[in-house]
Image (cartoon, rainbow, N blue to C red; front, side, top):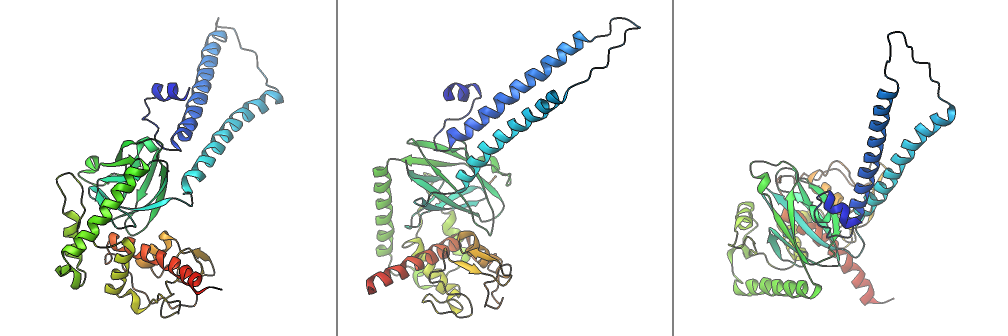
Length: 365
Ligand code: CUA
């Protein structure tokens, strides 16, 4: 039944766990809309003929309806809309809530390409490799204008905004290659802003990830005195690295270590640690230890959970939601920090959480 409908409506294949549910809602809406339209046009046609004017003098008698019919005419459409709403709401909540065991991938949209960064360290442009059957959470941002990450086969679409993080998630159900499109007009080559999700078996994905990690280590060992190792971070060079593209459309450029390790370097180079500590003591700004996932009270009296979106906002618009007990003295890093650096910092702050837990465990009761 699902397959028949899908083909009749020319929908793309269903390759994620939510795809069938999204399509089901689509079928329900299409079907009820068609039934209702048929009824309305049918009744209209019937009335046109049945109550046509037959002579110059004939007057149609005044027809009155009853309360029962009125209730039916209001109740039926209302019930239909509520059914649509509840199916849609249920699916929406599910699609907005990544499972807790989801793996994270940072996604940066840029005119006109998609870049993927794994917390383990590897980067890729244009190809997102994921394991089949495992939930994947994407943390999206943009380096320039608004883009939208759209995978038709997964039925997911999420805007990528400059200076902020948004998220979406999916779980692929079968191995294969799936087209990623940009669904927000973003300039001259918007229509060419393609990428590919390559869904691999768990073993193939693991093998690929291990290979990438070996590559990162090899590069580090091969150029221990590479100039970028000592010199402070320069945005211009980072941009050049970003654009260096290999013939097969993928970039594995000279980044070193895991994303969190990169974040630690960024924190030092960008001066974050002049105001923030990583050992739990409050300084000019809140400590980063155990910050990720913490519920913070703000100067406005509201509370906020320090997730990716809030951490990014704190870097880009630090004056908007200030943690209670601190002065609003932090300058904005909008236009200063690159998207890749923000991802690295966020990932670093995340690991500062588990580090503390490990310390507690190793110290014993
Ligand atoms: Cu990016 Cu359209």
